[in-house]
Amino acid sequence: MSGSWIHADWPASDNIVAGSTTRTGGISEGDYESLNLGAHVGDDAKSVAENRRRFLEMCGLPSEPAWLNQVHGTTVYVPGDSTVPEADAAIGRRAGDTVAVLTADCLPILLCSADGNEIAALHCGWRGLAAGIVAATVMRLQTAPAKLIAWLGPAISQPAFEVGSEVRAVFVALDARAETCFEANERGRWQADLYALGRQHLQAAGVDAIYGGGSCTFAESERFFSYRRGGQCGRMATFIHRRR
Image (cartoon, rainbow, N blue to C red; front, top):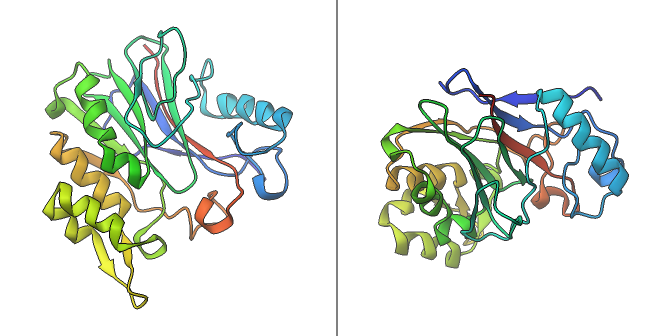
């Protein structure tokens, strides 16, 4: 399969390259077919290394990002730190920086200052959202929230994302408006709108310029990996690069 990637559709500065990979264009086989970029999911290490090389070439990136060990927490990594910690967001402030997160249903969010000088990538599953990863990242940025723009990469959609009442209760306890992000289903459970929850958390942090959303990693099996659909599977990268 030929490779492709999704260009972020947002009004970012012209020094920014940003978007998400799909599952096509790599050499991995089986459950990881074909552009798996996750080194932690059981895929052949040589295949992942080649996929990551192809990712850089395809997207025109000069070097790999610091691949995070994502744990659904609120730690924010800034490239240049001595080690790459367990973190679910990364910030870049230097020309040449690339930051990225890996997902296969969770919501990836990119942030960029209007002048293109500061960038961030966030991994937002429901646990990370509830824990406050969006607010934690915005607080670490030097740019005022009103001067940030956000882009939502491919995630699982509401019709495919069933959760229990305990998940809904967590979000409603944080903000009563979260009730609008859940629809009851015939099984006595709830369909959660991860995109809407992400937008609410961005707006609560002061970010109003929000773009993207609308894909479904679960339903679009030819384009995306989905952990909920397949269990063992690959990972896509959602990235942002500051060229200068």
